[in-house]
Image (cartoon, helix red, strand yellow):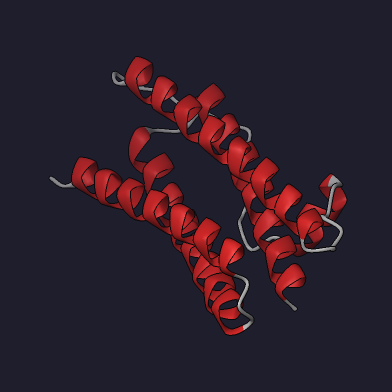
Length: 144
């Protein structure tokens, strides 16, 4: 059961990664340079998480999903469109996706704690802290 939830999380991370990269390429507006760099930072962070989660699934004796078809068939995150996009739209979408990832990580953490899989629980703690901080920072940026 925990490997299934980890694979769902892995799928969500992979689609989120591609979405962030799409936004990185298609951001427009006066704050282009700042947001372009921030999105690269975000997708680099997610890329590290993808590798950690896939390797963690292997450590637990499972098999990580590895194809784009697998990810698209299981993801809860909506892909970005291939079009120019403004900062507010991008960050409102990122907030939604961070909420989804936080919900995934919370569920996995709870299962891991129940099954005494503390390394899994600890890994989810790191991600929950990261998503929480990003959510707070983005919310502050979007305030008017």
